[in-house]
Length: 323
Length: 283
Image 1: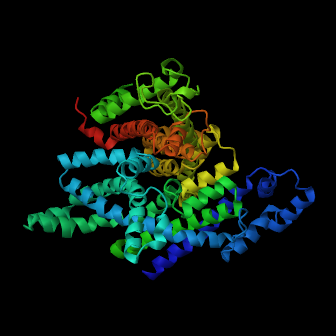
Image 2: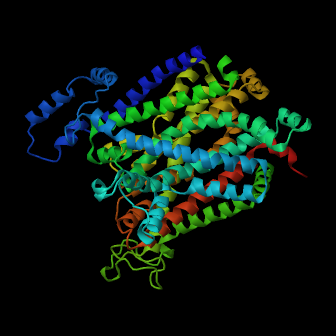
Image 3: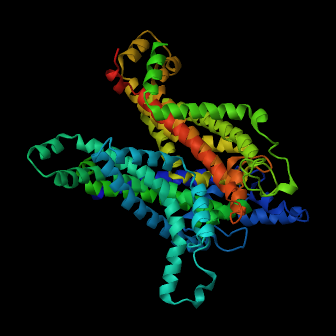
């Protein structure tokens, strides 16, 4: 087990290196570079001031030196200071992580609770009415723009029924509330964002667990289990389900980039102060240090997600470890 | 031709896919003939009919500048169509090139190219797209290019996998034995046999590109007003969420129907092109 994990970890080093390189190249595609953007608004900025700014960010040095300098600071998690408010980029990101992580984890839990039973049930009752209905749901789920769903839910529950808040993570009068009310207020604010971000994943995962289950049910050992007269529920839950679950686990890791990336739109819609919203605001302001910081951190989180998926796969399936 | 017939017949067995196919063709017709079909000029402002709910004069209502929603949705279909096809075209060119080279040559070349694919897959795609668009000018051409260069990885993997099995086959050995060049071997002998999963991926890719475009335009980073796109109409839907539900409902419904149709066609194609299922073919 340990050599396997060590191998996976080693593989992450060149990947992380590549991620930083691509991020760096993307940002330096900018015509005129970051300084131009910061000074183009005011014509009064003199050539002297521009040079000073360039020196400040090290932009007067050759590109590869800039990259190495940036990489050295990146290892210390120092992404420089935001162009917008001069605060340290890493501080800005860290304060946004908890809420984004909370929503993503809740969404993942919701996805698993809803999708796996749907998938298993459709597989065990293949071609039944339930299977057909869930297939239709899956296709609609794949094809629905999440932000449109968010708008519709906001209109229905927020505007017409008025039972759920449509923006932010807490009410304005939250300071007057008792601890219990605060929690319900918080939960109410999270219901819509979590459901919206889970929606697409539910469609995907239920499809995936259906095909995984179908694959397992056709195996010889399931026929054997049935042949020796085990009750159907034992066959399904003890023999088939556990084996079908294995490939499903890898999906957790693979769904991380989608969840993080998708956050941009619904965090913006619901005005949730998470990483996605920060990223959107930084893009609009062309705040390059923050953009670079979030890109790298988002990608590294994805790698960690993949690593967790690989390790959990190895934990449940001894065949993987031996490779 | 015989092959095409078999594929068409297999495709037509799936009723949902046929409905999807008909819808796709209808949508393409609508966007080609938008100037003749749409009842109003999509950018014509009418200050006396601001935020009118659906009525006889404006079947789907009007937006905050009194522009006819139905006309804007019809013209917006052009954006989706263009972005979908061009972005997927770009993704196919990159993906097929990288996938064929990696699969054909194998070894170090394969390892390096596939690590590159892994790196690209590690980026939360939407973040990468936003970052590039923030640097460049947000318009329809940037969007097509950016979606293309961030969505070729699946195609590359599929083509590579096909190449890995195909290059071991006898017909490749035979071609090699008579001295066919590598380039000709890749493009004339192996690639045509590797294309069916690519077609399927491309169809799903169009659906995905349309979704991403609508999201970008919704965030104001895509097609810029007053030009209509389904995504930027939804932005006015959000701005007027308390008073005009029709601005949110209809454009999103157009996206759903379009994306759903492409996905259904993709599903039908997957079954129709899967040679493992051809044994069941009667006649």
